Length: 339
Ligand code: AMP
Ligand code: TRP
Image 1 (cartoon, rainbow, N blue to C red):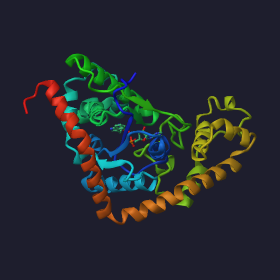
Image 2 (image 1 turned 180 degrees about the vertical axis):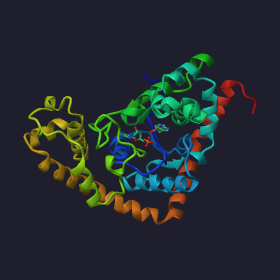
Image 3 (image 1 turned 90 degrees about the horizontal axis):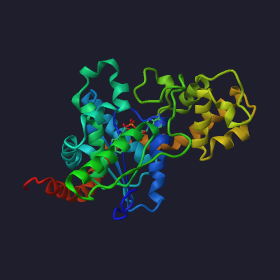
Image 4 (image 1 turned 60 degrees about the vertical axis):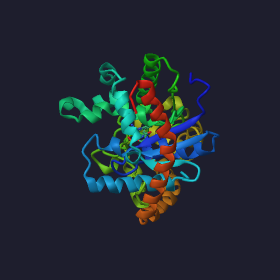
């Protein structure tokens, strides 16, 4: 368990590596916004641009994605007067602590990371060294703020566990109780939103076909079309949740519905038992449009004023550094680096 001397503090990050998806919204962003009201000492949210470049990013696209992601966070209710919102590269302490952690983490630990294996596939030798070391930079993102809680989607669980391993090894090696053992916060019905064309694959920003994901900037017609064309099976919705076993596409649509309407998959099934897809899909599309429409309108408005986004990110970075810099300074002392 996290030692009591650590004040409850939230940190999470998101890569500016393409447009935001419904998976990002339900798995992460929506909860980041809710957690602002949950009594934490602080909530810190970071656009992790240094993580994005672990795979090739066209510089102009990277810049655009950074504005888009920042606008998406703001439009979803992240309030810069209550949270610290910034982009990672403006706080050099992340890369500095990342190096220290490269010297704490073991190669064997990295070799177990499933996300690297999935992303690298058979081409591991051709991947950047950064992609391989990425989880140790992620640990630095979190521990640089002594964050105790990290709200993420299911796919990031292993990386948060590695963060605990790094904290523990650092504390043991140096005989200190300096870094907290961070908890992942993975809760709600949509911690793993699946691809609309294949219910066994995660919905992601970079999937091959745009039809497999809902983008936060999709308009109402596009959202309706994508849900209508989403793959399903011929069976109607069952009477109980049990009946969705081995029906990944059906289960995914029910989970999305539950998350968007702040209820549980059980309640969605009870309400829609026996409904056919011709009935359920349009209802789901209407719900998604009602929830995402106002957010995407606000995103577009914010993205028109890049100077304002830059100003917010700079102010956020200054606030982040106020917390990060003393923690890095103390880390250097513990390690024995002369300053
Ligand atoms: P990324 O886009 O990989 O930077 O992810 C940012 C956040 O969104 C992380 O907390 C992810 O776990 C979450 N996330 C991304 N895709 C999904 C998905 N399909 N379902 C649930 N959460 C997701
Ligand atoms: N690795 C996360 C992802 O791909 C993004 C991330 C980077 C992150 N640093 C973080 C998430 C720190 C939580 C905390 O989604």
